Image 1: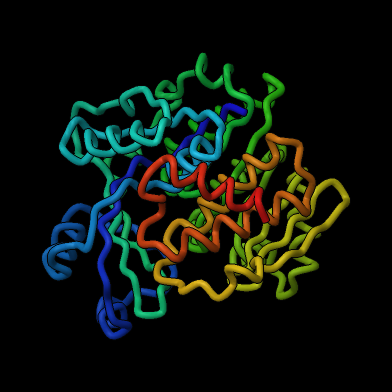
Image 2: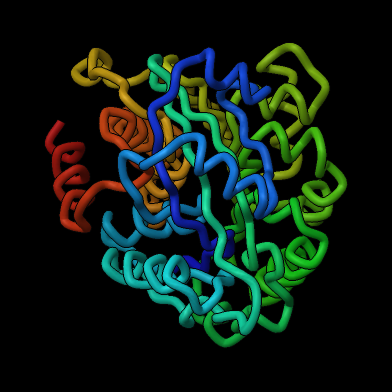
Length: 332
């Protein structure tokens, strides 16, 4: 299956922080906050040298996982012709994901995300979108989109009006072409501050909808998983709700699968939850491309997500590591 992924082109900078530091910066642990360029510079100065720099962006991470598991992917995003943007492109191509040089912008700077990792492995993100927030409809390669089997959109794109328009048009084109579609809600901050834009993306429904429990409850205004899943499944043929250490739920065409983390890796030490949802989506989409049912999609998604949180960063270090992970799952 070939995935056309639309998202923010970001490079992650990872830092270890104490809860007291998050409190001092008035941040809510586990959530994402948008920052501007002055904030990026001031926060970077306070945080000091990062532990590591790695490729980021939710849809890009999912595309990398899908390719690593054996699929094909094309990433559509926007970056400037600067050191950060060029690094993002080189790193994405290292994972085998095609891109159009990420629509290099003439002005502005590329997006970055300061990923703050607490002692309990929870990640809190400060995101400077840069020119990635300016993805326009004309930046979407309709030829590449038409050659895909599925169009995947990250909910973080709802933070920009112009990017929301580009995404809604791309989803509409995908439906017109008879392609599968997928949307991830991405973060509760998108629901709190950008709900109308997310709802625009959901108009017409999607083949796959990804979210976590907190996002599902907030979007539906419910305090019960069963009620929230029933409501959201009206918008998707396959609804996927991640439940942290409890695993995940898939509600698929009337069938429902609720599965926990595989027992053989449930005791794995969690060091960084960054990218767990992105990896989950990549695994689920790969399983879907092989004709998997709700139970099988959920099982592979749980297995892959449980593995990535035992590493720092949202991606595995090498492309071949995804193939090895898939082989390990197949041998269970």
